[in-house]
Length: 322
Ligand code: FPP
Ligand code: MG
Image 1 (tube, rainbow, N blue to C red):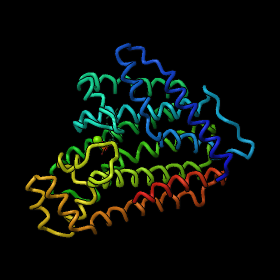
Image 2 (tube, helix red, strand yellow; image 1 turned 120 degrees about the vertical axis):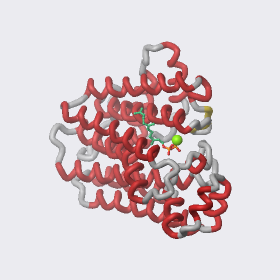
Image 3 (cartoon, protein in one colour; image 1 turned 60 degrees about the horizontal axis):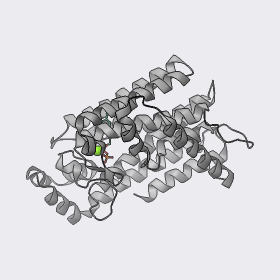
Image 4 (cartoon, rainbow, N blue to C red; image 1 turned 45 degrees about the horizontal axis):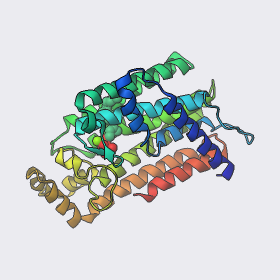
């Protein structure tokens, strides 16, 4: 990766923030809530993936993207889809804090949070429809939203089920998280070329999907990390009886762990995991394996090498958290 590539990405991300700030929801009561979300926008990994894959086939004389370019607009829209899912997710999870700040539903109540999420989701759809190069592109966007909701529904259906398997968990997180990472990568490729190479599409899809899987596994491990502040509530999944990878690994290896879970006491589960560090370690190993599969997907992709370097660095940063 070159310094030039890093500088370009930095500038492009600023353009995405600018585009998000110029967004008018047109419904006055929500402007303030939308702005509060933007002022605390996080790393915007999904928008970065759109931008980076948008440059996958560029030559050395790459220029910064303009404020109204397809890639900046598409990256902002993907980030809006992500924001909408988070606002809804915090209602569903009853989470009071995100990114270290009170959540929308905590400040404005559930109804306002649902409407705000709906409004942001609608704008995502409107913006994507306005820049879509084809109906297939729109179908893919809409189909991915279905996948995200499907992943959430799977998770909900498995709540409290002590027979939940690793395959079930993987299907749920593939839908709720990895599908959006995959969409971000594919959106970048598809907005940058009218007829992208098949090899690049396959690499973007596999990279996004594996990175997303790793991201969610690490997020789920983080739920049990009561020492480090992540700006989010802790022990939330176990409190909601959502059994994530460390718990599933425990169920696989020790039949008596079931009784600990049946006691329905998050602190007892935490004690068990702390007494069996191999379970968190096993989950981390799965996350690292997903990251290496993501990196593998890049190895023979037809893309500019500085861009591949940037993606590799992003994957390495994630692996360092596992
Ligand atoms: C975070 O999971 C949530 C998601 C990755 C997806 C949420 C999706 C929906 C609620 C679907 C419906 C919404 C729309 C707008 C289509 P988590 O709770 O495990 O992670 P967290 O720790 O970040 O809360
Ligand atoms: Mg949540």
